[in-house]
Length: 217
Image (cartoon, rainbow, N blue to C red; front, side, top):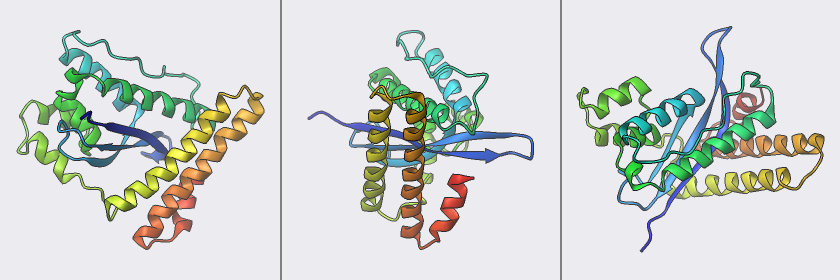
């Protein structure tokens, strides 16, 4: 029986280090029945520079035995206020993960598992994979819980909502509409993503208005 690995990159958020420095990170949701993974469901947040690190690390670890797909190119004019640029980068990151997870060589890499299923920084991922931490790779993955989900049923419900919004966005962008209409089409999934997160907030008993403020600022 073929094992399935499903991965989504969604929910872009602006994170501020201080008044002058900010970046966008993305949620990586993974759902699998593969024996290669310690956890069958996980959710972590990563930024673009961490994807760049992952690709470089996987390429070095595989000793050029695996041809890795390219990441979406770094754009010097990337704007955190441009919904279309964020959507295109998010789609590219998701496609990158989908392709590398088809490689048995990559599936055996500890750095990849820690990247997808732990909340460790890249420096701690390197240390853990090299055995320089008090905890093992498996322990690091297990201690990173699905804090926002109360059950697998809740996760399935929310992921289903987000997959629908992603499909709507791709269909509109591929339909050949004018740039103005395409931009409008890209903005709608952000409202749907906000709805997904609001649903999570509702599951936890929190106010959706808090989520809406986070997503729309």
